[in-house]
Image (cartoon, rainbow, N blue to C red):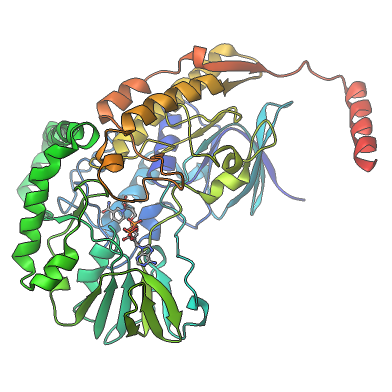
Length: 511
Ligand code: NAP
């Protein structure tokens, strides 16, 4: 017989968001929950992205949970292996393992308006939950562009987030498609061993030096012996980034100075003026994510690297044709083409109170109150939901703010007592969203003259938060009940009446 389990809370995903939610639930004294994870281990994006050179471009002492400081970060910008190990460590330290349901991909989730709970179908049995916390993350489903002829390519093809470690790139002719945050880490890592590397660059990124260094033994000792020093270090990293926010959100012209530094960085490594021109962006720095690397330009300047300043348009056999007509023959194609961010596949699997999927509800653009709750989806919240992303600081700060909101949401449900749900009022979502979008107009992401994955197909920025992390923390401290409608369960149905109702429904269905 198929398994069924009822829990108070079902968390979906076990990356930073899902694990953070799990720890927070336990710290709130809630143990009746599961974490549904489609893969066979925790880690989210830090499990899936194992490409050579993968590291975080936010300093580790800030890119970690405030409740789980790590005095032993090996580098200022630690690599994927260490971040993944940190998440495994958090899982063990906070007793999350018993709650994990690995290999449980959520196939469908439906709100039951009578029982006031979510019915969840997974690849391994079904669950029901009073509340769902969706922490599937915006960078979890790889995007490969629809390129004519790609299916017939005779060589190797893979995405940066699904690296094939069994494929040996040594001496091969390799095409790297895209020049985003992933690609600029991959290029310097593989350039020394490939035969020829052709970089398909549709839009050049702004790349600044990354001040990465090993964290010394005495520093680590100090953080272990005197934890307050780790806290101070984190506070300093946070404060500097908070001060930068105004330039991104209100005064993009102030970023001109940063642009000069970035141009100097190009000039330092790229002596060939033609290549330098190809690599120099024509939009305001910050409009797309500012990338950090001290090894990217030196690698691009190597004789075995070619930059095609155009997107990949077509594949003919083993020949790649760029939008400018350039033809290149290769053995392998690596797509560093990003993720389904504004069209997350999970949204198609969530069916709300009116029978509509989240994807249908969001077809005009994603929107949720305080990045968390969407109209028509009671007792459902997203971690790293709409307009919670950052251009310059640590997402862990935003995640922890959302977890404060989640904790208060659950407290409010407790206070209401009985069988109740909170359904966000469409007017509250609308008012929040109008405020966010009005502020967006002045930001560099909108006014900086570029196209980016921050914008959806309607040109609206539904991904980033146009303020400081401190401001978001204040906005998510508590649930304001006036923004919600309290939904009570219909009166308990007597068994006999229930039978009659079920029979009527059956009859109606048969007609
Ligand atoms: P991305 O930033 O979305 O970059 C995708 C790249 O693919 C862009 O350069 C895009 O060009 C290009 N592209 C798309 N279709 C193409 C085509 N047909 N031909 C040529 N190029 C094409 O993806 P990502 O690099 O994987 O990064 C996604 C996000 O992950 C980042 O913004 C960041 O938030 C996160 N990330 C973080 C780190 C970190 O260190 N913390 C590291 C990696 C990733 P256009 O620019 O013209 O669109």
